Structures are given as C-alpha cells and as structure tokens.
Amino acid sequence: MFSYSNAEQILKAMGEETRLKIISYLTRDSFCVCELVELLQMSQPSISQHLKRLREVDIVLEERRGKWSFYSLNKKHEFYTLILHLVSMLPAKEENIQSLVVEGKRVLCE
Image (tube, rainbow, N blue to C red; front, side, top):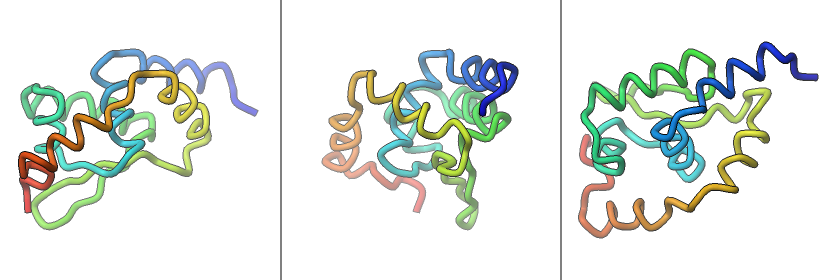
C-alpha cells in the first residue's frame, strides 16, 4: 500500500510539464541527455536539472556508458504502473522519437 507522503513526493516530482515529457519519452526507450536536449529543444543544464529531480525520487535510473549517461524509467519503482497509466493519458511522443531517427540524431553521443 502506498503512503500519502510517498505519493505526494512522486506526484510533485512529476508535476511539471518538462518532467512529464521526459517520463513519456522514457516509457518508450532509454535516452542520453543529448537526445533529450534534441527532443525537448532545451539546454543540457536544464534537462539535467529535471532528470536530477526525477532521480531524487527514484523514478529515473542513470546508467553510465563511457563518458555518457543514459536514463531510463525505474521499472521496479512502487509507482511504476501508476506512472505508466498517467503517461498513457498524455499525447504520444512517438513521432518525435521517429524524427530523431530520420534526422540521424537518435544517438548523438556515441
């Protein structure tokens, strides 16, 4: 059973448009910060601050690959199914990911 306090922390972390978009992308695949910069058309420091907030509540996991960091959703998080349900009610981001592939920007950091 979830506690009100835990639910509040998770919902506050998710309660911002950019972070919801990041979560939406991460339901599709893991991404490097440089890819999220392209998808969201925001600066790298700004994206990193949003990812930090999501990592603080354990929604997002960070994996180092050489000098690059890739981010994914924490599928073991107690709110994972709730997160997926909330994202399923938002506009799909699949076309943006496809445009990255078409433009050859899907993996800028390798």
